[in-house]
Length: 256
Image 1 (spheres, helix red, strand yellow):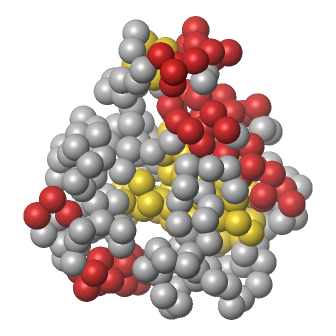
Image 2: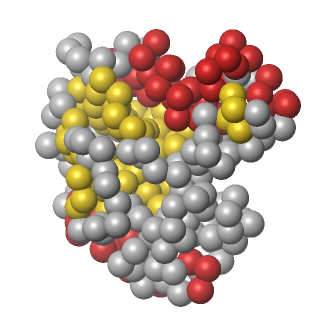
């Protein structure tokens, strides 16, 4: 990704962003290098879009080959449930059907297993990986999830799965304070942090996520610093920029 300068410890991994966390790896995909066309070009991973299912399946297979571990799928609902995967087989884990219908509803996945990779899909919401030695979680955090406590639930999940030592988190590409304008009802949801997360009508989701991660006991928080709305259109899908007709990129985490 020669046109991007990634803050350490993020690094370019093929066309995507990688980061190493304690005992784990995380990958944040871009929209590049896939098989979809039109508004979903090219690495659309979202099955609940109007993209061709066969193209999405090829895209997912390519990402799985890059990761080397089958990803786990959920149906995201902007809530706070983080599903634990502590044994296999488990519903929602590839290669079982991942059509979206019948998948467990959750906005995060956590596991102590090395044979599965928690995955969330985004197109402006934040993908957040949280890891310590022994377990890893990936959560999907939009403003509703952040206001309801998805971050604290992600931290709780890895602790309950046995991580007693330090935790690190990585915030992947998502809507930045440079572009994310919201109404007063959304600002009111973060009134206690208003003085440092509000910029006029704009809201800093990443600052909110960092604050919540640190409050929940995460020792180090890394932010990729990339906005999906104003980055080059060839780099990320953006629900807001593309007026709802767009694909999905992924945040994927797995134990090393």
